[in-house]
Amino acid sequence: MKRIWRPVTYFLAVVYFLVDLIFSGVARPISEWVGRHIVSRRLRNWIRSLPPYPSLALFSVPVILLEPVKPIAAYLAATGQFLSATLRFVSGELVKLVLVERLFDLTRDKLLKIPAFAWAYRNYQSARTWLEATEAWQIIRMIGRSVSTHLANWREKAFRNLSLQRGR
Image (cartoon, rainbow, N blue to C red; front, side, top):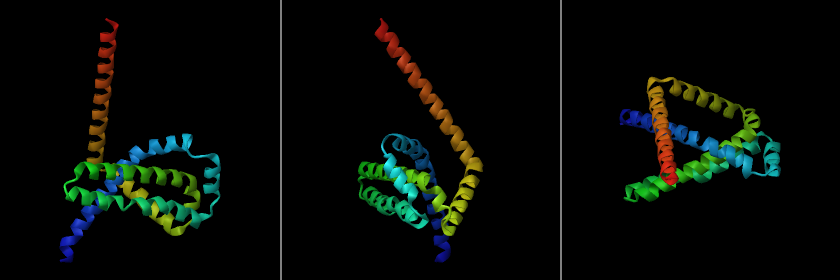
């Protein structure tokens, strides 16, 4: 029975990892905007002043509070509430990743002083580097860039046509 669950576990881990990577690409620009416009200088200075282990505790708060959103969204999807599940999942992931991104930016040096965190971060970076080097990832990135370019061209053409129609 153990042999059956092993591939399933690996598959779920890969899916989980990919979802976090995709959401982090969206969350990073939002996090940078939040850092520039919302988070006060006093709060930033306080967070930066924390020693390593209190920094880790603070860094863990958004994960602990918002990670349960995933199983809740899965339950909602399983009960046929797909829109509610999608909205909860996307908003929960974005809020979690924005907060984690901001906190990591502010506490990175302190967190990397903790041996277990530094080890986990190095392994995460290695896994991410490996994944981004795979052919599948490169193809997905290429398709994503193509779709993005196509949408930008379509939007530009639509606005140009709208401007021409208004000019008449």
